Amino acid sequence: MRVGIFTDGYEPHTSGVTTSIKMLKSALEGMKHEVYIVAVNLESYKFVYDEENKIIRIPGVKTGIYNTRLTSIYSRKAMKIIKSWNLDVIHSQTEFGVGTFSRIVAKRLKLPVVHTYHTLYEDYVYYVTHGHFDKLGKKVAIQMTKYFCEKNCDELVVPTDKIKDLFLDKYGIKREINVIPTGIDTQKFEDTPEMEKKIDSIKKKYKIGKEDFIVGSVGRIAQEKSFDVQIKAMKPLVDKDPSFKMFIVGDGPELGNLKKLVKSLDMEKNVFFTGLVPYSEVPIYLNLFDVMTSFSRTETQGLTIIEGLSASTPVVCIDDESFREMVQDKYNGYLFKNDAEFRNDVMRLKNNKDLYDEMVINAKNSIHKYSKEVFAADILKVYSKAIMKNKIKYSKED
Image (cartoon, rainbow, N blue to C red; front, top):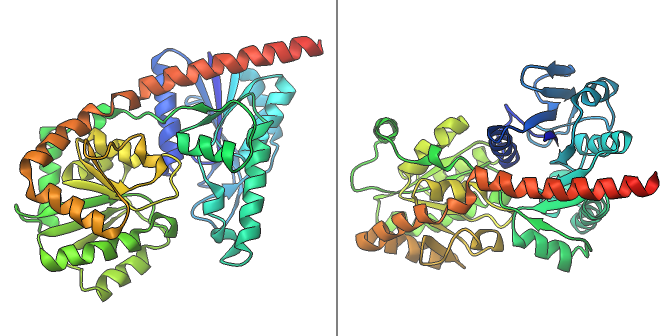
């Protein structure tokens, strides 16, 4: 099968969407399918066609939101190249810019469109409204989501039941929805002797002792991730037991504010910010952590949680529907409802070695269904459905 993936976010940009696309591309190519990428050029304002790697990069304008750019909805150069690819199916991973272009391409070439919904836009409207007209902004976000997802694709994919239920119950989207969690290369997160050397180096750099217990998080340092709440929740633990350490891996617009918060709470010897690290180094940090945690309620899936479990790291995270499918409470981690529960869960894991060791084993045993191969196999079934629908649609027109 020849698959065209259309996306606003791709390498070198780091995000959950980028990871999802990379995993899908890798698995599909491993199954001898051909994958082509149409993405925004995040590095320059030039049109670039990397024929060897089958990637078109379309220039776009900066949006002012992170390192994102928005393209026009049509590119004549790209269309000419895409025609030569002889695609069987288009898989859009964004609603705007390149996503709109994917629909135009599909209509011109009579191709089926599969769309994966990644971002809960109603949780991000403050980046546009800056606190003004948030209610109106959320209504607009919901209507735009409904427009793109209800009738503008042959098949719709979401990563969790949380999003499916939201679409059906709140957004009023009336259509079949395929729930397929993103898969990852689980083997890359397994501990190795080489990885242990790098972990020792990190411990030496941050002066981590043998008795220290590391609570860690990975992600974009942004308001919606609630790292400030997480740091404040750690404060009583650190005051009671200084052997508790926290690592926050990533970069983003809130990093400066979080550093100020840590300083004001006198936690500089216990909370460490690594800044942005290459994706290839993320497994090192996940194996460094004794426990992984997340306070974010805005995830569509929470890919880093799967990565943490793949590193055999127990997870303690907020009781949000996006995490319940991955984190089985009291089996491979804990789901907490408030800060006090979070602290109790972390303390329990630190002080009970038998319980901790059992959860380490359970963490590893719980991620097999999240492999990139299972992910690709499920997506291929959706491609086949979309292709069949498309054939029926155009046979009626003929």
